[in-house]
Image (cartoon, rainbow over the protein chains, first blue to last red):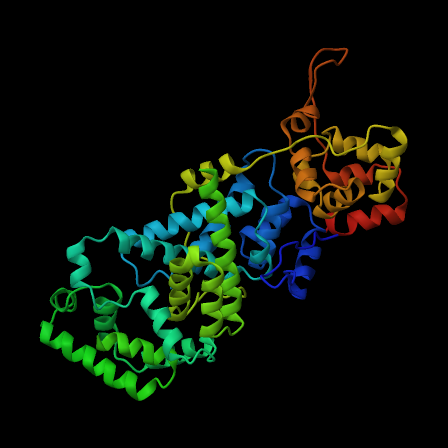
Amino acid sequence: MIRPLVGSDGKGVPYFRHRNVEAEIEAVLEWPMFRAFELALNGRLQPQTLVYLMRNFRPNRPNPQYDRLVLAFFSRLQRSGERLVGGLSQVERERVDELVKDKAIELHATDKLDIFEMSFKTGAERLYLTAIAKVRLRSRTERSCEDLVESGSALTGEEAADLLGRRGNGAMPLAEAKAMLADVMEHLTDRERLAVHYVHELGLTEAEAAGQLGCTDRNVRYLISSARRKALGQGKGARGTARVSSVKQ
Amino acid sequence: MMHQQKSAMALDDVLARLHEELEDGASADRLRDLVGQHPAFREELLAFAAEWLASEGSDLDDGVLVVSKTVSGHAELLRQFWAAASADDASPLPSTPAALRDVAERCRIDTAVLRKVVKGFVEAMTIPGKFVSFLAEATAVPTSQVWVFLTSPAIAAAGAADYFAPSGRKSGGKSSFADVIRKSDLSDEDKAFWLSHLDA
């Protein structure tokens, strides 16, 4: 009775719904459609079921109940990306949100939302990470030469990945490296994290970062070297080392 | 323009694959392999990998059902959504009586009920999704297309008024799916099959 998912991952393994999602969809289809929509709108259904209803029961023309379902989907999508866009400027966040919205609309129109029926979280993360990577690349090319010189020590996406490739011996799963990085970051104080974020992620000068933090640029240098010392103590693997070496530059 | 769209789609497919592989434990060697296979997307692949590495992921798990914040820019979002949506409201139903009877049987109703549904005498939102799915299976079209047909303006207007009534135009009335089943000639067993949830 439930339409099977047709998309598949890169290895050709078909996407699948979890059993509890299938069971919920089957139960919901027993109800009249207005009741099914109500349950989804009242937050009584899993997000995958909401996506199923949105994909299979789009009416011929706009209707208030369905439109609320669409807004519920996009609200959840935006909320899913909140932590991921945390390190971006306001302008970049807006660009990312727009790209994600456009892509989600395209995926719905071309009936390619399968990944969201398997895991809404994974689907949302994919859209956001893709959009963030695109925006960061665009921001880099949009910088003036002067900015590039000043932010020469910033950790760019490409540098980070290159460093990973060189330092990780190639064999370490990147997921493990990612966990190590998270471990390193956990040992930093809030101000150390902020200093690293301003200088090495946003590309601010030490003086600009000092302005943001409300301290002297000397203090910023101290925070970053302290972060580096902690990272050297924590990170023994690819990601940690890559991060540290970029901090050193 | 077309080329750009194709290229963007190809990039998204490659990034989707990279995402899956990263989540499955891909190594830096594997990342290099992928970059080697898609040199045109080198920058994008490396940027995505770097974002993924630096990201802790979303903090909203699928088990959390309620999201309190509402997305911004409702009107524009809905305008874009509906502008992208295409609607093929052609009837998925066969035209011969014998074929209609077959579809009705496969949907566990009779032709009288089926005719009421497809002629617009039933309020679409009272129809259970199960029936729409059965109808989709019986007519071999996607569920979404059946629903687009059942909610099309022609069907919506059809049951609403009788323009050719002998006494002049009459406002029609749509029934609920449950009422139509209740008043039908279906067996008690089939009625119970449909009404067990609709009456609850």
